Image 1: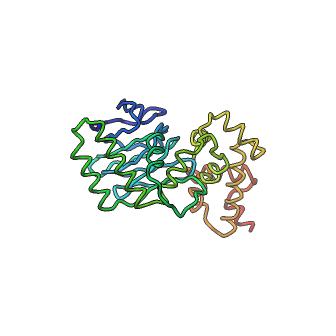
Image 2: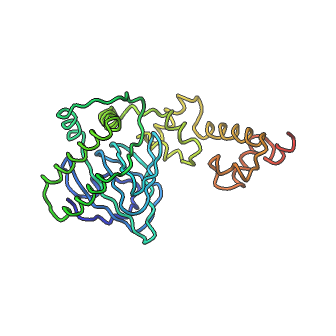
Image 3: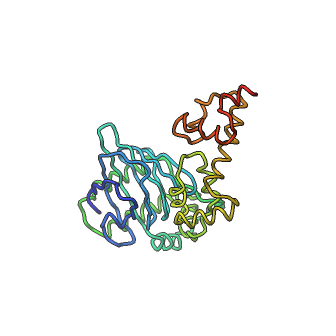
Length: 285
């Protein structure tokens, strides 16, 4: 097991676990810590990951949704792109146990331990389960073993948590297998766009979540929506704004919900689009 890695996420793009420089084995267990909060770090995971947060809060955003993770959760993330925001605890501390495992490990386990699941995966999602006594004890066992640089122990501990998740949460495990072993090139741009419409994300961030360059994203977007992304987003937001204002909601109540940073930016966009300020529009109604 690898000792704590104090990594300040300041790079434009991180590849994990590669950028931790902790080896190339298919299973890796790392104790990660940080003392600074961060927002929307771009991370490409080259392996699947279990994250057992010890201190702080994590916000994970992928093409398929977003989840807030605390020390009461187990995050299960398959390889691919994600935006990661980390908030330190009150003592300016952020700690997590990261368990990386490749598809070879997962497929071998799946082949050797057949089980029944009642679910038929429909779409991808960020997976998490609530930490229970077993998982809390599992964390403690990893802490006790952290000084043992023994690869066979790492492999056994990964097998242990995979076995527990498959037995305790078979539906979640089935989703993990389905998502991890699915072709990553089939991410649907439309689902990414629809989910993140009012999240305040930039075109660059949306293209990242789609595993595309900005130019490729714009080209595919135009083919689907028959217009550039910025015009599409603006039109949808303005239609939403009209609907909210028609219901007598105040501009100060809706600009943030529509993804604008301040009232002035929203009012300026609205007047440019309709020729009236939001207040004038309401008065006319």
